[in-house]
Amino acid sequence: MSGRGEILPCLEAVYNCSSFQFRCNNGFCISKYRKCNSHPDCTDGSDEGAFCANHTCFPSYFKCDGYKCIPLSYRCNGRRNCRDGSDERNCPDVKCSSYQWKCPNSNICIHKMRRCNGLANCEDGADEAGCNVTTAEGCREGYFRCLGGSCLPNNWRCDGHKDCESGSDENSTCITKACPAQRFRCKTGLCIPKRWICDNINDCGDNSDEGAAQNCPSPTFRCPYGHQSKVCDGKTDCPGGTDESTTC
Image 1: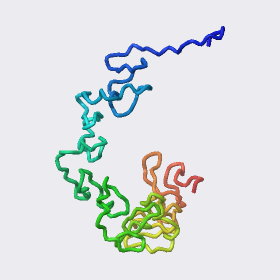
Image 2: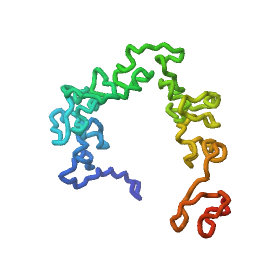
Image 3: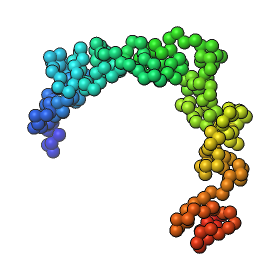
């Protein structure tokens, strides 16, 4: 509106688009790569429409049966990137690794531990079909269910590593649980490898795997002049007594 109360029409923005750009009907410029990608990038949607049916994708792109262009790297990657799934048709058969399981109706390889874990990892849920659910928790024999719903091997519970999404496999019930052979039970209840005891690393979190609690030898460190010495053993080994500092 002008100072005299006149209503002036809005002028459409008109830009000089480069050869690498597409001009929208309202005058704005977008990248040519965004034209006919099944998503309106022009504010007026003029980059999408019936004309896209005859659109030719750039050399490094694959055209879906519709008209969407996707990067060639998405072709036969085991995931449906085209809405019609045309990017996963006529693909060479993928061989999964020995620790993986192949979804029967796609080229997706999942970890064997995800097979029958209570969650669909294949797009069609084929990894949860025909599973022998025998436990009260709804997992197959030898597995337990996390609070998040996934099923994990029993020996992953209370092993000192949070494997469940919520960490529910390492809760307060672990404190009273006995550790398997070759494992050390921390005061917190965590089970850690016995070789981690007295390695000068607080693996338990409460330091119960280190220090006087395990009769660990005094830690060694290097004196300023290169000599290896014991720390805080009551004997001065380094010049200047740096091994028996006030931190002892």
